[in-house]
Length: 314
Length: 314
Image (tube, rainbow over all chains, first blue to last red; front, side):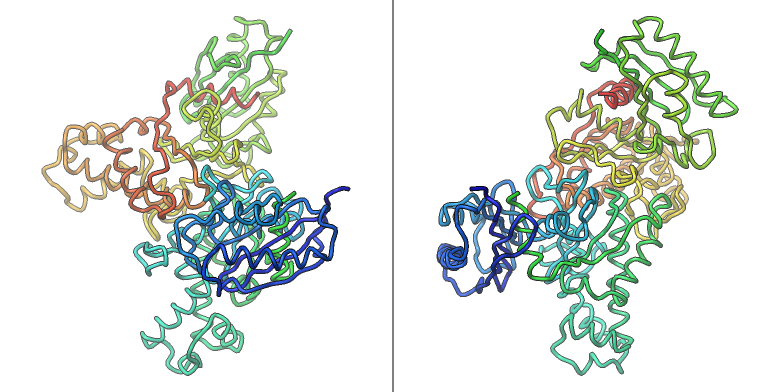
């Protein structure tokens, strides 16, 4: 019997989504469970295995080629999750690929969530046919997956693609990583909210609706922006400026054909991606101008992560 | 008869070096001629062909597999030299690979000089066996060649690897490319001299020997630095700081095993590379600390460029 199916698993800080995916990227069956609420990672893996086996009862298990997992701070080479600030389990290195592979008696491959997104876009999404592109994930953090010569850049240790930790503002805001001025501290959902609170504290645009909209979220700031709120628009403009500037440096290094935005903020088209494109073009070295496409993922949100993770298996 | 030889050509702003190189990287015969002094690029190619044919009279021409050329702003995909500010011929795009290939009746492949250096290091030099590394060329300009998964990153258009045009100082010194604050405007030989003149004009360390050493060059500043001149040492320290900071961003993107410096300044060990290493380590995201090797090319200067260019053929 040919093995035509893969399990794709997306481990997020709150929720774990999983699905059975065929080679064409179609999700045959799917489900999800909380990532949190398990005392240990062993208990989490045990609960996940039960859920996965439930799902697998719908198909012939012998058709399964393996499991692909996308997780924050996942390392492709070691199969471990390292120092993941957004996951509930502490500890140096969690050998998740090994644990889950043993529990399920299937080969299991792990990578970080942004790399899984890049694989998904390359195999099933908007990057189909592209050999040189970058996926930038805008969520709680900022992640990225770089593809060159048709292959993901893992780097020598599996940790390549930390675009969120490129310095956007020298000696700027403190990042979760402890360093100053990382892009993630400004351009993630959390970073956008931080900019809003900082600028409100400085008294900018006291007439803005944001001043009476506590607690703020990236979504509420986005909604204020599309309603024409000046402070909210300026926050997105500043976010776009920093993304455009840092992406100009990225283009000088890997010269991608496209930069593909992924995650909730990726769909903030006119408010975010249009100014990102403008600032990027302003900042680019001559030879790169008017060549780089700015795109947003067209795969359905939660499914894309599952599809991308499943693509690890092939 | 098996084709075991290649012509390697390094086109510099002043001088063109060429050699017949075997598959092991040994230069069988070599020569050089001025790049300048030819009214048109056609006349340059004609003169180069005469010189190459002279050299080839020493070997059986049927053993030659082809020609590899490294040139500033050379494009691997198109075989053209584009907008090269340091070469004597103006014009949008010079189809040098085609012109030279036709003249010599041999396949001819072109790339930029830094990519050729990276190929040379990978095939014959200090990067042998490495799959993920960066070569940074420090000369009149700052160039780079990025290797990931064992392959050069050319980008979608052949223009990847312009590390010299990553912004080192936002809104800083004007670069030759017209933008502000590029690394090249600070950390090239020209940039180091510019820092010296700027700081001298600001009256820094009036007792420095540099004040009475006009015209300055990167070499004379280096010599002052190793003699303990405080201004010269501070200039190298600042150069190292900017290199360390921008390289920390590069590591976050491609996570190389080694950063290999190439060119005259690459041998300014304790004065430049040692502080580069220190600043880089200070700036790195946690997961990268104490992992990236800082190396300098061990291939003999002029030969390395010829060897690298010849490696294009294989």
